[in-house]
Length: 251
Image (cartoon, rainbow, N blue to C red; front, side, top):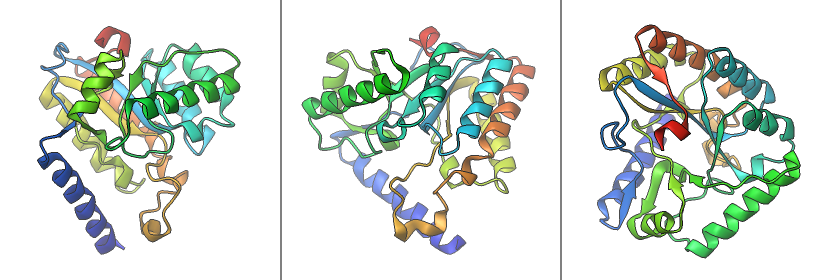
C-alpha cells in the first residue's frame, strides 16, 4: 500500500511540475511578504468541505469559536446539499466562504463564462440550503493551479484569489501519521513567521476514483484527525505569540 501511495504522490507532483513548467500557468502558492501580511499573523483556511461527517465540521467550528478565530472555508458545490445547518453556522459565526469548484475539477481549460456559471450555481445551491443569498467573491482553485490569462481575467472581473503560503499534503495524512505532520506544520509557520495555513476538512478526490482506493480518501474517517490538529495548531502558535486573522483583515 505504501509503495502504491508513493507512486501516486510522484505522479501527482510530476503533473503539477509539468503544468507549472509551462509559462502560461501559475500557482497560488506565495509568501507572507508578498501578501503584505505582518509577521506573527496567520489565516486558517479549510478546503474541500463541507466534510463528509458533519461531526468533523461541528468540532472544527467549536474549536474556532472557543479560540475566537475566524477561518475561511473553501467549499465544493455538490457537497453543499444537505449541509444547511453547517453552512448557516459557518456564516453566523463570522467565517468566510470561498468557491472551490463544482466538483474539484481544474480550471486550466475553462472560460470565464463557464467559471461565472459554476459560481452562480454554487451561490444558488447555497441559497437553497440556508434560505438567504450570499455573494461569493473569493475563489481558491483546485490543486492551486491557474493559467496566467485566466487568473488575470478573474482579477479584472472582481474575483479575489485565495492564496496559500505552504503546499498542503494533509490529504495523504491519517490519524496515525498526523502528529508528525502537525509538528512539521507548526514549525514551518513558526519559521516563516506566519502566513496562510491550509487544512482539508473534506476529501480531495470526488467522486472517489476506484483506482485510488488504497489512499482511503472516502474520507470521513480520514478527516477525523483534523479538529484535534486544529486545536493543537491554534493553541501552540498562540502560545508562541501568533495572532489568527480573518480574510477581511488580510484583504
